[in-house]
Image (cartoon, rainbow, N blue to C red; front, side, top):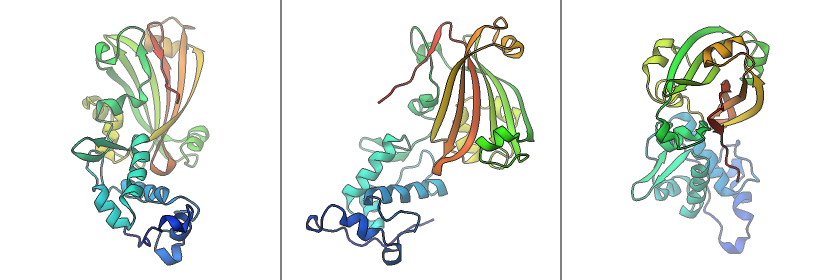
Length: 276
């Protein structure tokens, strides 16, 4: 795939700070796709175009993208404009800069990326010391979306979805019980066997086998008491206090791709989030 909008040359500083956005935003004259709004800064328009290529699979997770020089030539803008767009994509954890090697599409197979969505940390030590999570898949079944799940996944009530239930344990001790709901179309072929056989992060599996990359998530957190089913699977008494974390994960262009509800034991672990 090639997207090559014919950007006009970037204006000189004498043209004023807003000229680039105004001049390049005219889709009829520049060839820029109408989906890039006329009022957005030029680097934001370049960011949108790079995102479009990521979404279309032109560059897959782990691939090196073209150099800033090549992208600048492709979009007919300065390298500084491309660099600013890439900086934002790197801050968003969509791209990764590697000194002396280039810029790569981020992948959940990388350790610092795969732990982006795992926020339950041991009170003492760190993730490396506690070792990888031991996963037990309880079920993976196809069903019709309820009104609640359909609304959150931007589906229609009754659309096909997959529900996955699993338990994560550390050093043999159950720590997290999770229910996941996934749209049926993008995850056709996902089975208990597929999930059980794969030893890497689940989001890395989604990338490699289903071409779905989770890029951001929104979470809701509250305290709950364990019901009978959760108590049995987590090895705690019924009514035991648990941390409930509901996550809605999105792929490119804010398309919801996963609803996940987890129950966390926190006797020796805590949920950690960094705010900036």
